[in-house]
Length: 114
Length: 111
Image (cartoon, rainbow over all chains, first blue to last red; front, side, top):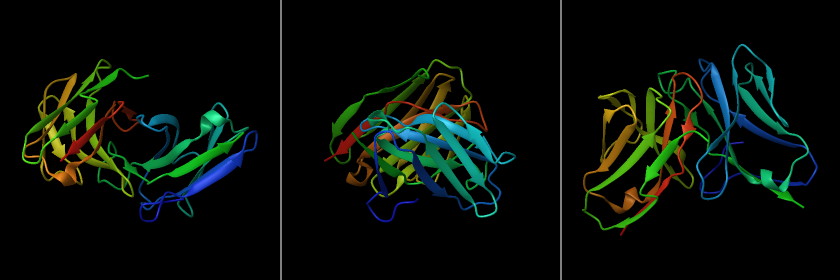
């Protein structure tokens, strides 16, 4: 979910479990969505993206689900590993008045316990 | 990793001094972006460029200017740095309505 104030929403999971990170977006005109992973001290790293003509897209150990009816996006990580610990945030392309600009959510901190 | 470098990676400066951050890409992507990242705000767009000498403002452009004289370089200038501009700055590139790739970031501290 989106952060409130200075504290990010957090998700703590056990190694090997599946993780689900949620994101609500605001602009029904958005037609492109993307998930990033950001490790401490590094730049955001692309994970997976999806266009609005799709409901689901799978990558390696990750799946993105898009529910346009309720404007909700989720990232599922299978068999979560300690290396997955990071901040994850979603972005959409429709809120900035241009489809080559992205608007980013504030992120969710995922902690994987060994 | 996308071929994006940022320099300097860390900088400490004093209020009122000019500062220039550089983003360099080797991917020949058309679009380049400057963001700042602050706790509680996430990534916010400062300025972006859609071609050589073509730039436009983002949501937090006050106090910043940019220039792009070559496809591969995008410069961000703080004309007179203030403490409120202490932040981590990220450059990103893209080919358009598609994924953006980010650089490693520059941590700027204004005292």
